[in-house]
Structure formats: C-alpha cells, structure tokens
Length: 57
Image 1: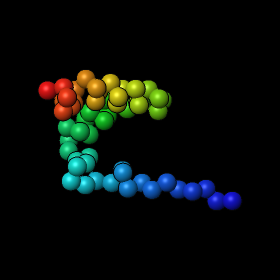
Image 2: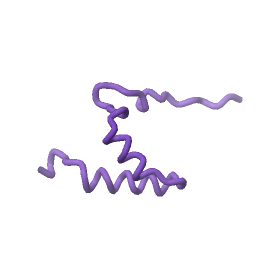
Image 3: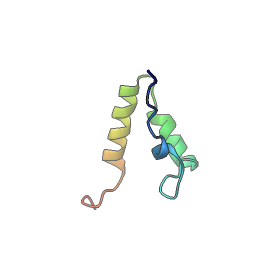
Image 4: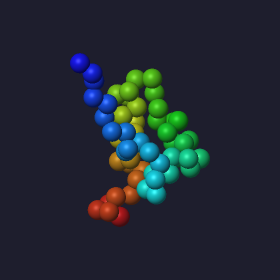
C-alpha cells in the first residue's frame, strides 16, 4: 500500500504568502525549534500577540 501525499499547495509562495521577505524569514528563524510542538507553540504565540486581527484593532 502506498501512502497518500497531502497537497502541499498551502506551502507555496503567492500573493498572500511572502516567504521571501527578509523580515518574515527572520521571524521564522526566531520561532523555529528542533521540537515541532515547541515551534508550533511559538508560532501560535507570535501570531496571537503580534499580528493584528480584524476584531482586535
């Protein structure tokens, strides 16, 4: 049995994804850890605390 490979389209660059931006790359480097759970927690915290949401501002 072969494993299904999920569609990775959500990882591609686009008009809403500016992953080549030096500031975004710097933030990604700051939150990334060896442990994927720790990386997810730090990513969640960053977005929660630093990204303005429509109901927050």
